[in-house]
Image 1 (cartoon, rainbow, N blue to C red):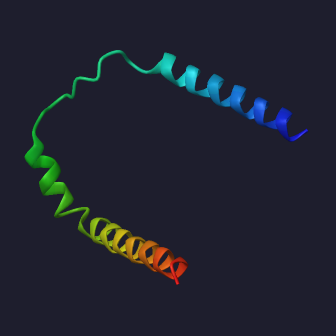
Image 2 (cartoon, rainbow, N blue to C red; image 1 turned 90 degrees about the vertical axis):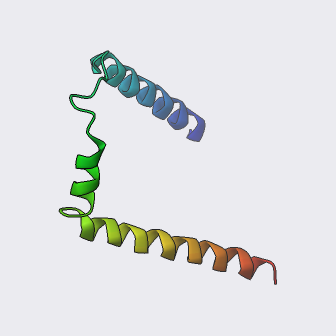
Length: 73
């Protein structure tokens, strides 16, 4: 029964991905290539989410190191 559920999940995944790929526009050319605007937005409007993400990533790295170090003992 588990094997049948896995096959159904894979088929559903392929159908969803295929439908999304067909609806994507063929052109991925950006409207503007002004990288400085991204930097200005990142360090002005989005500074709090940026800093929270950095703290979350550091905490996850420390947690992974703790888990790996704990298994060696």
